[in-house]
Image (tube, rainbow, N blue to C red; front, side, top):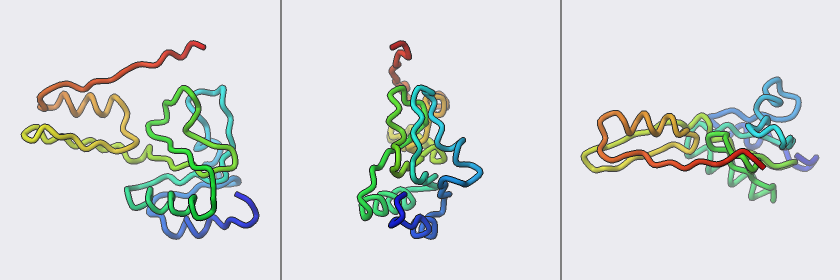
Length: 137
């Protein structure tokens, strides 16, 4: 973040963790699945819930920061981060709740295909659909 952006304003509003350069977790938290990309975000907001996501978006917009959303962390194009921007990391939000009677699923933004498939297999009708993405360039 630039000198005019104070990350503590966000840290105090999050239930989750705010990670900034210099923190022990920073290098691990900024690392992307596709190692071709090596961005260095100004901050990473590891959100614990929807209110954290809203606060992080508000914070980034108020400061005109580039915002990148990281879901399950397996994006081949490297769009889950931004140099000098704010990463909103949803990887802690992995819950999958299936209501088979209503045929409704509520899926957290960080849920991976494994979590979705496991929930779909536990007594819910229908199937869990997914796609694939080649990692060959």
